[in-house]
Length: 250
Image 1 (cartoon, one colour):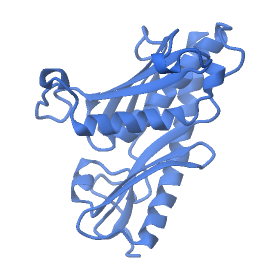
Image 2 (cartoon, one colour):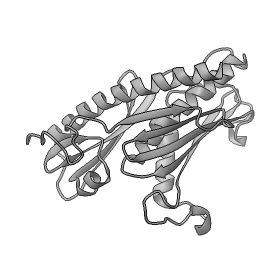
Image 3 (cartoon, rainbow, N blue to C red):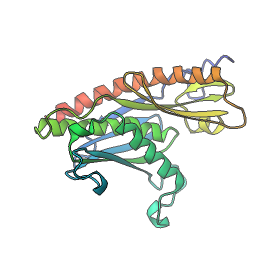
Image 4 (spheres, rainbow, N blue to C red):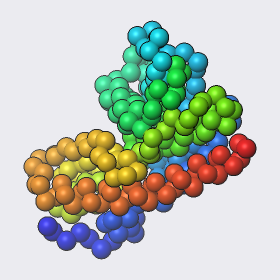
């Protein structure tokens, strides 16, 4: 493996996350919400609960969770056209919101949730790389706070979350593995990867794409090791935000 540079353009080491902050309760009208900032990327995540499920789920005694994702027009500096003006979301949007939904559903006990639906909405205010990972990480905080509210109101017999989930990007830039790529690094990466993991270290999803240079097995192992360390730090930020949000709601 080629040694990684000691410092990156923004001053981080190869295994350092960008500064991360999670502000719980950012949207007071939502059942659960958080504003997550990862460097220059900022995403508002909200969780809304409805006392019904899709028709195909009705009568099963099981709940459901789905997610939506969108980027505000000015989130990238150059104005993006809203999906509603095009009549449908583009392929990237659909792929990302499916990823968010899959990631969050993996830690929900739908029998405990009962016939309720949770909608997790992730809206990108500013995009500087890693928006889908920030959406999953912040979306879990919003989801956890919404579930805390159900439990506090004695609407559930048991908590519906069976674990936690977070995500981080990583990649190969200049033949060196780097954690948490910003936009400039991502655009120059030979390999770009997004890793979703549970709090106990289980892999939920790994998306890895090589641009020109095939991904070697050794590099994949390096990226997974970087991602695991980064996700452990993100999980600590999630715990702090959930505790603060629950205390504010009490």
